[in-house]
Image (spheres, rainbow, N blue to C red):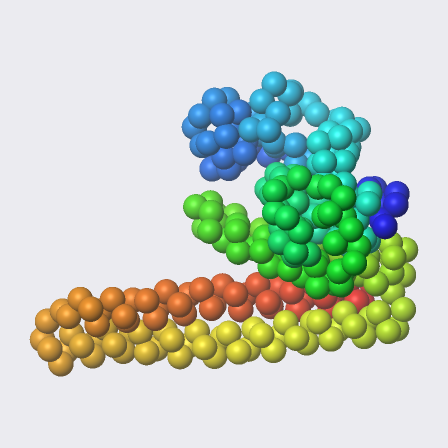
Length: 267
């Protein structure tokens, strides 16, 4: 179990959350939870106006933020009882998408009842499961979820990079049992994951080019040959192009995983 690992996990999360921000396009910065709804109070140390509408967000101190993170995010996901690394993956997911959602991804990863409430079954199954696989499953589900959000087009690149980095650092925490000191075998395992991610990215790039090329060819070819639009054929072509875009996004994320695993292995 990841006893006394809160500070290390919070350091990873805070590195991505940063200081004060009041971007109008971020729904979390509004007290009403949607862009233009309520008051634009912003986010500070990751503590957002939509979750804490009555706080003085701009003047929040780091000490205040730590207390809120421990009380409202760390303890609700029972992170202290989770394996090293799994605690970080679940905690950071909970910070970004809510503790209940973080627990749901954990439960799905370990085969526990998916009710969003951490409990004895969730913890026992998390302890019995392969922690690296659990971490990677949580992060994969997390990325799929944020990719479906309308704000992905604005914040997607940063979210994707964050999830990749959290995954790599969580795996390193598991390998080192929280000490932060990778052995040569641990570095080798990290690099093995980096290579696997690179192989996936190459395969996805190839498939994306193929699907995109065929999709465009179908649309253009049908229009020229039939001297008009066959909407069924055009629809097939459009679906192929959409598939190509999804593959390209997946490839980009795997390239970010390559960098994240390589960087952590080098530390």
